[in-house]
Structures are given as C-alpha cells and as structure tokens.
Image 1 (cartoon, one colour):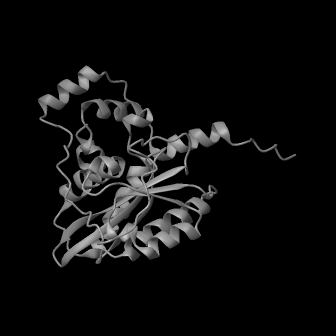
Image 2 (image 1 turned 30 degrees about the vertical axis):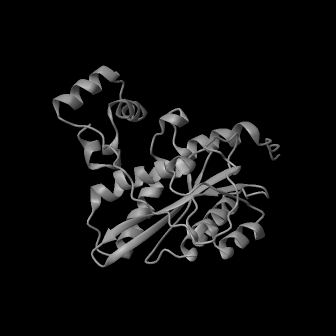
Length: 251
C-alpha cells in the first residue's frame, strides 16, 4: 500500500484502494485497508471547484442540447462530450482539450496548446476520430458531440467540421456546469489527480508529456466505480466481446 503512494493509484480512497489491491492479487478486506490507511494517515485526493472556461461568443447561433443532462449511452461511439481547461506553467498558460466517450468514460481525444482557439478543440476531435478508426471502431454518422457554449465549440469552423464528419452537434447552456457535467467531472479528476499533485509545470512540453502519461493511465489502469471497477479500456472490450460477431476460426 505504501508502494501505491508513489504511483498514480495514490489518488485512490479506501474503497477503490481495496479493489486495486485485490486486482494485484492481495486478498484483503475493506475493513483492513480502511484501518491501515487510517493508521498511516493515507487518504485519496479530493476535488476542488474547477475554473470557469466557458466564454460565449456574442450573437452566436448554436445547436440545441441533445443530451439534456442524460450522460448515459448503450454503446461506445454514440455520444461524446468535450471540454478544455487551463494549466499554469512557468512560461504562461497551457490549454488542454479533451473528448470523452459517454459509454465508457474513455478519453478518446486530447491536445495541449498555448492558445485556446477553435484549432485547439478541433485537434482534440480529429485525434478522437483517428484513434477510433485506428483501433477498428470507426465513428458512424449521427454520433452526438456535446460541449458547453464556449466560442470555440459554437464557431462556424468547428460546427462545419462536425457536419462534414457526419456528427450531430449538441450544446449546453451558458454558465450551467450541469449541462456538461460528465466532461466537467473528468476534467476535475485531471486537475486533482495530475495537475494539483505535480505542479508547477515548467512549460507546454512538460504539460504535454504529463497529460499523455496520465491519459494512458486513466484509460488503461484507473478503476472506475461507475464502470463496475473496470478501466475504460476493459469496459469497452467487454462490450465488443459481447456484441461483435465472432469470426470463424481459420483452418
């Protein structure tokens, strides 16, 4: 358990730490983990309030809200949510944009940059589309792309890009975090589990490296209580194992 405090799993509270230790082959009870963590004064991290990043464009015409705060899906690639956040460095602000799959909570696209333009969120979207195609699960027309009403997401360039890809735009209201609660929640994890534990960052390159490492851990190793204590990758793999047709064996 002390070893875990030097690893990303140090963010886990008692319940999730119990699950993680069992996955490592340790037959432990929750009460034992609870007692030891209390004795050693170990505790998981807690999230603070995220900063406001939504700046609505004046006189912008935006799509309606297709999710209506229902952040659930029956399969991967039916709905994605997107948002970006700020990270302070010694040379200025870095901006990190994410795209999340609603079904598995997986981070399917991300990018860090020194400016918060439409290009920032477009690159995160393009990465998400490329990664899904690269892993054999290309996006089909009709996927809902949901975001807040920030000017980057309501811009003509980004809206046209969604339409060209066959994606359905969905925009929440201004100033209401609940309309994009899933993205806000995962970005809260990002700030708590990575940024707040490892700052100050020197520059953008250091942020990019740290984000890439954290995303890899988040997707492939981080346990999620809402996913039955599986990782996002495991949760999607279980779906595809159950729903994709089996290929006949080669003889």
